Image 1 (cartoon, one colour):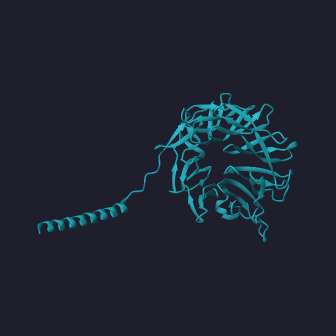
Image 2 (tube, rainbow, N blue to C red; image 1 turned 45 degrees about the vertical axis):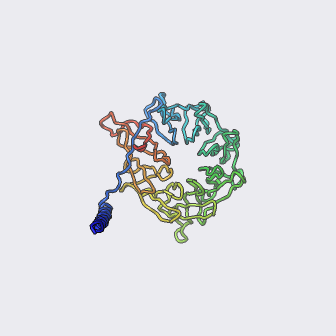
Image 3 (spheres, rainbow, N blue to C red; image 1 turned 180 degrees about the horizontal axis):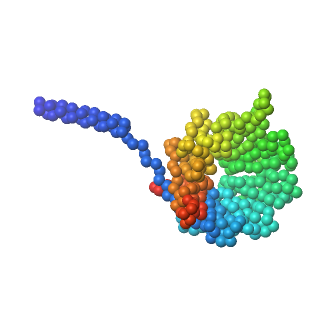
Length: 404
């Protein structure tokens, strides 16, 4: 009998404890504080002997950008900063006075540099060998690169007599540069914005002298060697601004008003190259749309927005009054500047959290790029030595999450 009473008490005690735990869990759920914002550390990458520098792009191992040299003036050179050794390397030029980095992927840096005669060429720099390889043209004087994916570089180059400019792909392995042409033939103009899946190149093409000289997006399949005109979908022109996965995004100009003849505000758009589906993103997404995964981010200058292509929902973000600009995307991260300022920020799409980045001692900072791990590069003002100004020289900066 006693053992039964003990068992009864034990069960009652267990039930009471369970209720207390449940109750306390509910109480904690109501009183839990939101997680603290992520903390970033700013690292000064230095310069190549001059007073200023700026970060442009990064990957897991390297930050690339541009820096004033000891010669000063317009002598800015591309650099590569090794994130493990903390060494900044001057990538040099192609015989001229300047060079600029565009992107980095693994062992390769791409950019543009001047020749001794002042003309400009795209280049590929091999970080392992320290060799800069100049890209050619299609008979004209200049070429420039835009993006890299794997062993493929995309850019644009002048045709004979500089009559036109055509998009190209360059294979680093074979040293072969291929003219992608235009839907209008040799006289047309084409310019790429990026390459996806190692197969598709996207960009904008147009015919010089057209009534609305804004062009239309294209996608070029490297396997079939076919360029498809995406069109303007009822507008008078469209322009591609970003390409990721199977989605091209950009801006489009609707037709003039039938009453006044005035052009209405431009709209953002998204185009799925698999389904050939065109999505009008509206006037709020009209300034330099960028795409990452199934999310498009853009601004109308006063505010910034994230548009989910799966749910077709739009979320505003930004620090508040003023303007919010966007400079780069990577994974779930967006980086840009807020004005008045500029103040550099990182916005995380999935958590909807915006973080202002610290500076190198000055007041302002600008963004360049962000990777999918949340690391950011750009430029930050150093501490001022002159009391009449809030900022010292701007230096290339690497911001990393303090926990990494």
